[in-house]
Length: 437
View 1 (cartoon, one colour):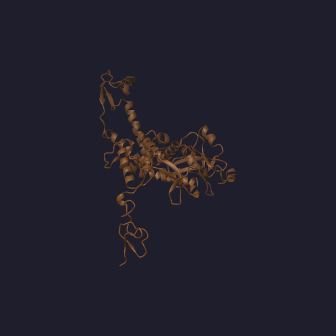
View 2: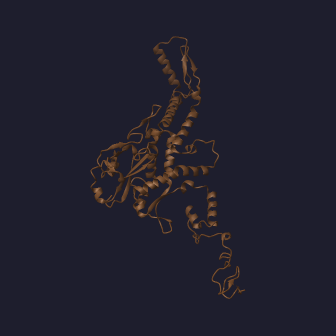
């Protein structure tokens, strides 16, 4: 949009239109079958959810982004002059690019949507990206096909950064990364879809905590043959709980009166399967977030592949689609294709092997003629060496009779008039020529 259009927005950019939701309303939560409310904050209290979300977001943020253009031969050349290239180093005055993209991806993984306001200069060039929590955003659709983002400003910093925007921010001024969507405009919330799995894990944690709080042992009853008054029963119960409640009271000696006897309750089959149920909850959460259970600190006894192969599979199936979606969204939002530019994220930091493997790969790279010595050294953050930029072809792949072998190939050069050069002999006029038959 041009400068005049930004200074004079059309009247349709009012806070009107139908809201478009993604499973959970903004600033809300959803109730799970366990009866517990699931939101961003409560979901992250589950260790499996926290680990899966944090790990995947950090892995995406670790991949170095570049803006590139293609030369005449189709080779990508980094272009750091574009405003987006500067934003992918310093998106705003608070966050680094790693922090910005990590927080965006946490929002995407939890709520299925990640939002950032695009601040521009008077020429329309982007100057800042301001992260917005998806709980504070409502997408509204207008009858003319446009859509806007109603943003509830949270905090003085966000109020100051978004002061020049209307309540309903135009779609071209919002970087919106969507997950799986049912209506094109807003993605379905992951924690909304996984509310029962997350709610079950929350209930299991709550049950385990209450178990510890009540003595870290099976519940039981105090029995006596005598008839107790209500006051006596309450006093004995309170006295028993004082002896037994809490980890700090484990091992204390209780003095019983009124002929009381402690009768422990036996664990049921459901209680005995409690640990297995927790492990199943971790596996279910891992499936929702696309993270192997091994990366959630739960051993996988069925693994039949190496860790390197599993990491490669994780990058191919989970991280690579995330990066592809992000690359295409950046190209579309900032109209890079109109300038012949693209965005690429380097996944090599995620697949960095052990030193012996890396050095063997470097040896194969250089000796096979696939790359130069300095190309490999740059990947290892080593200084270049003189003459290391030459890609050397192996001798056993050279053509017969070449400069490498020291002799000219058959029929090399221009033969003498009417003569045919002798095989594997330098083609010098008057030497080694065969007479016409």
